[in-house]
Length: 250
Image (tube, rainbow, N blue to C red; front, side, top):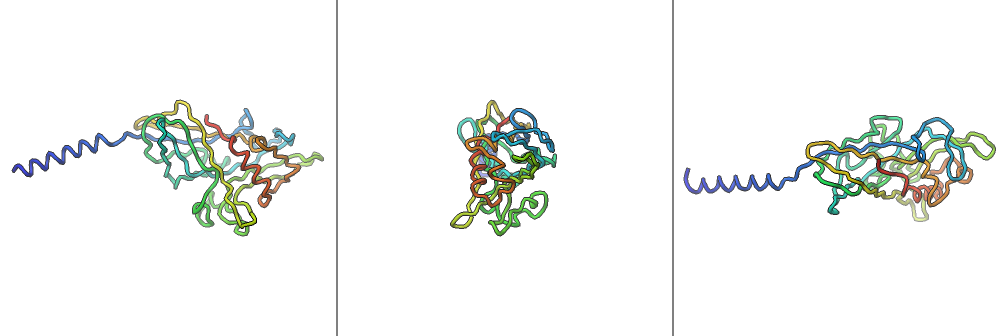
């Protein structure tokens, strides 16, 4: 081997070693989803809960989207989840949606927060984005903006006369004087001692407290807002404001 070829070989070997040294080790994460009413696990189809307004209610369905999920490292860097365009759909009645094994390679190390958008934004919230069920069952009527529901919570409450009434807490785009407005919101949750390890799977559980939708900073009273709120701008804005502390990490 002549000197030029020998030199090129050594340069190749050194570059390969440097690239190998620069490659950060990675692991995987799984996001799980669970539901409570205050401190108790949510039981469906049972009128046993009371909200801050004093309404007795039951829950039959919970369905929602989260998107733009990001993890913040201990040093403050943001790692964005790109699996499935960063979107996950959860339906309490479809067990497979209660767990999201993220395919992304996540850099190892400690993480101090998780951030996500509740709902869908921009080009992800356009009619036809999801061609198949169950996601396309969340379609939002074109006449009030199109795209998709951010959330559906269906159930019943006892009105002031003690009569069971249906409610459909369906959130999405809202009608404004200037057309339609995005009604999503961002949730950031602190993480304690959450670490991604090399070649292993770490899991987080995002827990929704259904009763928190009705509590803070505004009391949501079914007897005032009624059971159907898709075109009720005030009710939509109350739920958006209350959504900030609906989720916790378990």
